[in-house]
Image (tube, rainbow, N blue to C red):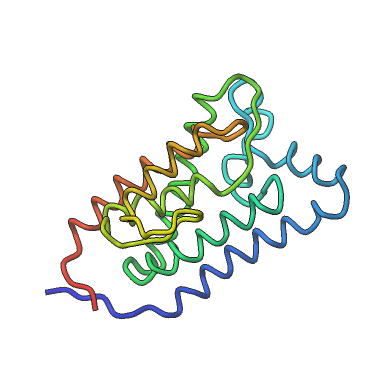
Length: 196
C-alpha cells in the first residue's frame, strides 16, 4: 500500500514559477523596444532561425506577449498546479511542467512555418491540464463565460481546439504540451493507488 500526504508547501513552488514569469514580464512594460528585444532574443524560433537562439526552447516559457496572455497562463498554472502538486509532489510536478513545455517547444520548432516566433508558458500549462484531465477527468470546473461546470477533460480538450482556431496562437506548442501531459498523466495514474 502506498499513500501520498497533503503537500501544502507545493504552493510555494507554484509561486516561484509565477514570480519568475512576473519578474521577466516587468521590463516589457517599460518600453516597446525592451519588449521586442526580450521576445526576439529569448523567444522560441521555429526551424530556420532556431539554431541562432537555441536557449529559446526553455526561456520562451518565461516570456509573454502581453498582460492578458501572462494572467491567463498564471491563473491556470496556479489552479492546475496547486492540485497536481498535491497529487505528484515537487519532483514529478517539475518534470511534468518543464517536460511539457520543452516538448511543446519541439512541436513548434518542427511544425510551425519557417522563421516563426512564439512566447509563453502555454505548452507547460497544457501539460498540466492534460495530466490532470487523465488523472481526474470528471473533476468539475467553471470556464468563463459558460455558466455551468464542465468535466475537466471536456474543458482541456475543448480549450485546446478553441484556442487552436484563434489567429497568432502557437497551437503546435499547445499540442506538444498536451500530448506530454496526457502520457504523463496516464503513467502517474497507473503507478499511484491511494491519495490522502
